[in-house]
Image (cartoon, rainbow over all chains, first blue to last red; front, side, top):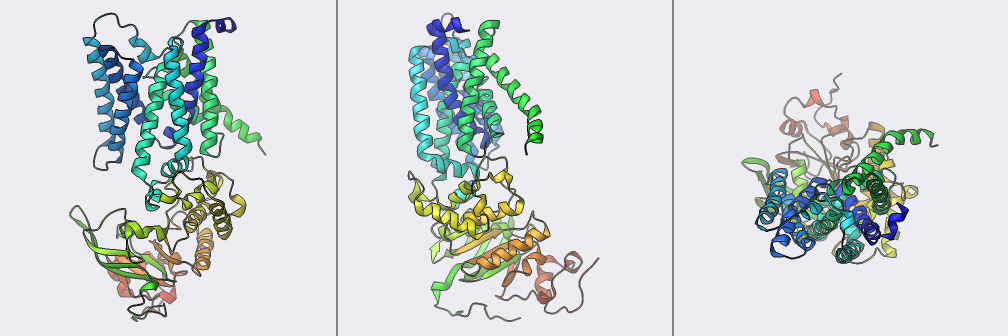
Length: 271
Length: 270
């Protein structure tokens, strides 16, 4: 794996992994404590509509995914706020409609479409320098927004009713949160693909939740776990010639299972 | 059945001491009438317990007071303001168990939420906020637990954390929703002791279906089952109970003697 570092694409992959981990650790924690992992999954799949449009109209599919994920996240947020709808049904529909739009647009696009797989299954080794800068900008935006609204986001995540009674602007903050999730999902798609995004959001965060006592620590530790899994997964996929996204997810899953098994043992020896 | 109020300043026109005023309130869900013609005034220093069966409208009454649902008819004022403005004077204490104890959060972080509001948007918590947090935590006896994870605490302690959070809002009145619903008897008793102390400087309104626990602590009792029977008295008459719970009440609950004005015989059933 060391000799691979001389290749620019491999160095880019590590940088991409790092940038993705920051978004994944922070947003993954929020998605897990708010119990909206499947909403995040829906956003990821709906984002494919933007990828298809990017191919058809000839703009960067990452930007297309970004636009589509933000629109679908706001729609799903509206669905989540509406007591009268069957929420899971509505989210499932948005999930599939986005994908269908993406598929139709790629059908309409002439030529070879091997690059599509990049967005379905991810390809951390194919992240371009331009997209690295996009990822960097998204990370920065996420960090600034979370820094500014941390205590309000914490409040509505923990106890929304109390936040409403305190007359906090609950709806704007909720939609802000959905927007930030959309940003994270669109950038993470490039690394593990839209199908596996929810695993990279959920697993490092769920793992870190077992070791921390507050949300900030969960975000930080989630970021570290996420980067660790990406490095190990990337190394394994390079040496064993496997798909990188899937390898990263399986590494994460194995780590999670190990803590489930070993945590009771640790607890036993703790004073 | 006396009409006199425990608050000595019970006089029309003494508006300053009236914290909550509910006039002719009606609430329907779909076709079902949940609250019918509710009238209630809560005065400064009151400690009112509202009892009633599950489904009797207690939670709905709280939701209307907190502005979470709007009534079909009637008016509620909190310190003379409509609920969405006036609710900032309310320290709301929810039931425990509603929240996930798996949520990673420290005790101090929960209590700090009591300091939140529109004015704190985009600002850090101030020094005064931190002082208030420490003061209210000391008040509920959890001063040393501030940096612990909420999940490490017992049910009774968590209920105290939510009381501390409500106190941190510096409220005129505490609203407690079934504060002892998931607690055992000893823990409930100490919690009511705490509420009794707090009542020396804050008005309290609580709802519960647990007549026995509630009635040993509160100053006055109301019975709610779609209609409200409240006379600003600590006497629960057998008529009130019958109207609220139906005739089987004496087989269901043990009511402390001092509350059963017209029943001297032992109601306890084994």
